[in-house]
Length: 162
Image 1 (spheres, rainbow, N blue to C red):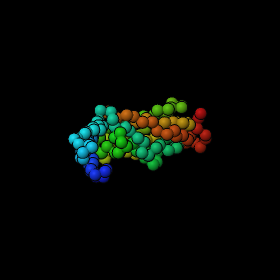
Image 2: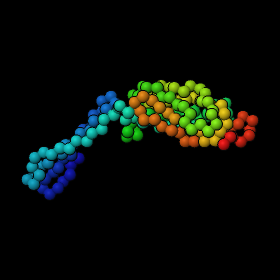
Image 3: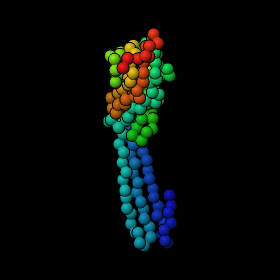
Image 4: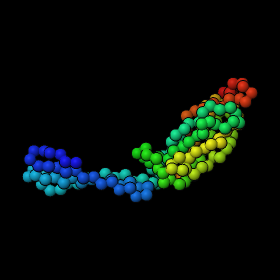
């Protein structure tokens, strides 16, 4: 980037290097012209990994009939602190019931390895009707997440317990 100022030109150079799960950013400002002789530098840093990843419910759990599989399938995305998918994350993501209004049990595959940063839970179900369930997602090295609330409707068609 060149920025003209007076009779001199100021050049801003920024170099970004991505190494595994660490993002390092550094910049330097080279100043030219009689009033700005010499070099000045700045450093901007972000270090990923070690808990800097966050889990986000990409597809939230939806209302479901007790015992039935949730559709669409719940998806949890692993993101870096800038909100980008972390496609290199390999630790399994585990979901569990967070808010459990009536003591329901979560069925299905509860621990999944992400593919391209997304953990797909295609067979989750809850066995008891209730209002205001939530799911939690956890994984080693990442900040966990809590889903939006959802309801489980009685298989007999009656209103969920409160």
